[in-house]
Length: 142
Image (cartoon, one colour):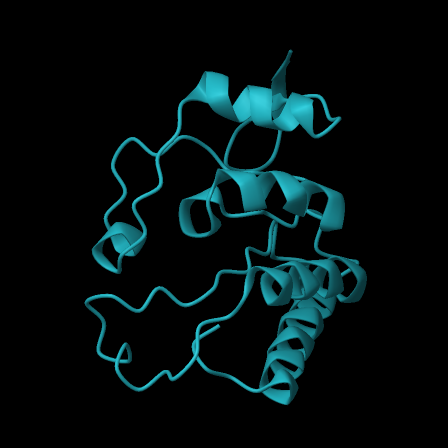
């Protein structure tokens, strides 16, 4: 979020839900909090979203966007620990390692991880890591 009201977030989810019902085109929804550093809007947003707010948004996304098959927790923007907790709030994907990430790092998010660390994070949360492609086809289980 970048300063939206709760009503504006719900309206956004409604748009995503409607488009998904009409097209079935989304394979995933990835809620992010606003990363303000080095952005044009950075100075106009008065308050950052809290970790609790992020988890609530993620959980509501899972419930409201029932036709979107994957809800991704963003360790890149939220950090590894919050990403791990997000798996218990409705996320079923943590994305991938970032070989070259320029978008959110330019805005101030500098989290990094390895494949081994992401696998451990998933296992420690009580789930089985699965490798997938960009279309969410699982091709290697471990």
